[in-house]
Length: 295
Image (cartoon, rainbow, N blue to C red; front, top):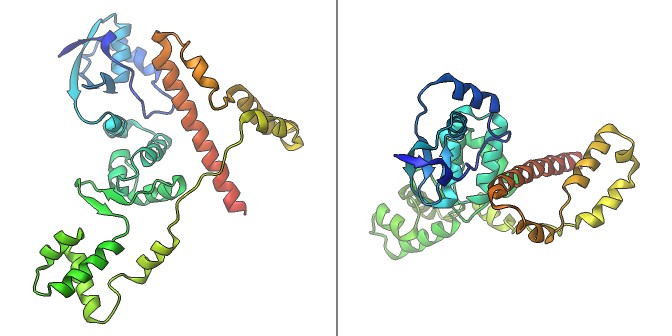
């Protein structure tokens, strides 16, 4: 289907560096047929094909071939990652995984690994770093499973006591756990053990909500950092100060500016702001990890 280029919204790209302008120019000059661009129907946002779209613009095209995809708008970024994963760098894929862990904490490690091309264990490490926890996880098969099945095990134990003749599947369905879990619960009860293993009980005791400390306003923090000799008199320190001074925005300051951004620039400004935010988040995470390791 041919669609007017002006109707398309820029992609929420998983590439930290954005599009490669060299590749766009080579694609535009090649004369090769440009395959259809994948677009989210509800939002008209490009999901896959940013390079092809820019190449079409350079060729002077006013319309491009499009293939529509449907689904929730909040899942578009994950789909974009999946479609581009073979061309993403490791840094791109790790950044995408961090973002998905924040936006979709209910997705299982395996589901996020499948989208980003990372190992499930690597996603688990990233989850612990970013705090992407949820009471349940949605697996690659679409099934919802609890992160800690202690409550389901206790309910299964009660049902087994009340209905000893019931099948594994009947108990599993009623308790919201797997038949294998019911089998283990039945075995533990027969041996006179607690239906919930000690490790799960320990996880219940140690699971506490993550509370983020209050963040100081940049106006209060920058003067302190400017006076620090270890920053002022080192090359890296001065570079960090320049970055902070150039990008410091206090809560609420941006609201008065956002309304004044010209309409034709809003998508690009939003894209760059989101990219800068992601880069700063990665830097903050790296600094916090080094601080914990040093402590």
